[in-house]
Structure formats: structure tokens, C-alpha cells
Image (cartoon, rainbow, N blue to C red; front, side, top):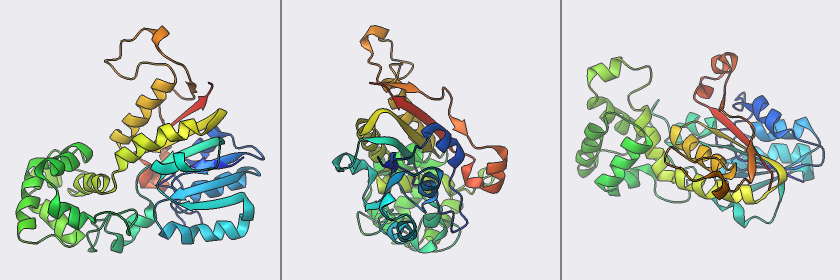
Length: 318
């Protein structure tokens, strides 16, 4: 048995970064000796390390970021055949030969390693190449995406994915700036967003004015939501009967996808417009928590990035 854990935001204990909601996830997964588990977004390996330490498990970890393979080497040297790393996007986990699994964990978003490295282009807290790709060897960089995206695509990224209220001004500013080839670095984009943000929004918010736009562009560049739509059903199919699926999300759109699918598998209404009678629903799972689990005050104080995290879990019953 192997534990498959998907954790894009999981970060290394060895580096000082703490995996978000790690103890709460372990409580839901209840890893057992001999169990097989999946970490679909390895990140820095924090969640994987917790799984390997908690019992004599075997863990397979996935990550689309080639830099994660180097960080996985230390766990491989320590745990040997108990641990395996696969360089792949969790949207493709249905193609894996391993399984079925006793537990699967997803930790969506971007890892602390990616955020902290200015050369990856995820952060506005400095100047780096405008990249934002989780796999820097695949797909369009944020710079190239911004240069070619249609107005509708820009609106979707910043208004819908980023949930940015000032989206109209930002979209117009990006279109004007790209015509003059003025967007090459993260500082260029951050300064542009600041320049078109009204003073009342700059000084009346607890977060940096560029936060939501950067987030929306990153989600679009990496096609993160479609990866979740593909990855979660594949994971559920690969889950053993009685196995547990856990999802940690950091964005309302990520959580919305997980909530809808979890309710569907549990035979519950998927949304306010779902009025089907109960005999038309198929019960394949049971929810382990009615409301999402959130980080404690202590964890938020120690790791501010955990403040928006939500954990959901279910057990496969049919």
C-alpha cells in the first residue's frame, strides 16, 4: 500500500517551512503500517515526511515542478523503497500504474519554495522574470501569456480567478502596457497594478494591491482549476474502498470544486440548484467533516500562509 498525497503548498520541514494543516490531515487519513498513500503535489515534502514518520507506510509523491525532485532526494535516501517521487502533474494521475490507495492528499496552490524564489516570478515582493510557471519547462510564461491573452481571458484571470474588484482598470492597463512592451518583470506588473489602483483601495486593504491579480494570472498560466477538475475524479477512482481522500485548498474557487465533487460522491445536493430526489443520487462516499477544517490561531501566527487554508475529507464506501 502507498499513500498518495497531493500538496502543492506542502513545504519542507527540513527547510523550516511547515506543511499546512498537517496534523489535521493525518487525523483524517489515519495512516497505517503497510498502507499505500499519494502526495500529488510534493512541494517541499512536509506532508510526505509526516506520513512517512507516522507509521511504516509507503508514499508516492507527485509534483510538476522539476525542482521538487532535488528536494525529494533526501527523503529517498532516508526511507528507500518506502518513498517514490514522480515528476508529473496530478491532473494525469489516472495514468499511473500504482494503486488503489489507502489515502490521497491534495494541497492546492503554490509552494513556499516557489513563492520565495524571485527568479520563479510568483511574487511581487521584489523583481524577477515574469514567469509564474509551476513547471518552467512547459507552457507559456506569464510574460508571454499576458502578451497574447485576449481581453476575455484577461478578465477571466483577474476578475474571476483573482476575484479582483479593480479588474477593469488592471485589464486596460495591461493591454496598454503590453503594446509598448513594458511587462517583462514582476516589478513591472506590480508597479502597473499599483499605478491604476485608487488610493482608497491601496490604503484600505490589509493585502498588497497586486495580490489578487498575481494570483489570478498564476491560476490561468498553470491551468490550475482544470487540473483540479481532472485530478480529483481520477484520485477518487484510484482510492481503495474505505480509503480517505483529503483536500487542502487556499482559494474559494479551489474549495468550490472540491466541495461540489465531495457532495456529489456523498449523494448530497451539489448546489442550491440541485433539486433531484434522493433516490436519483448515488452514494459512493461519506463526508468526514461537514464544515471545512481551518488552521488554529497558533498555526496562523506561526505560518501566516495558512490563514486561508481549508481542509475537507471523505471516505470511499462504494
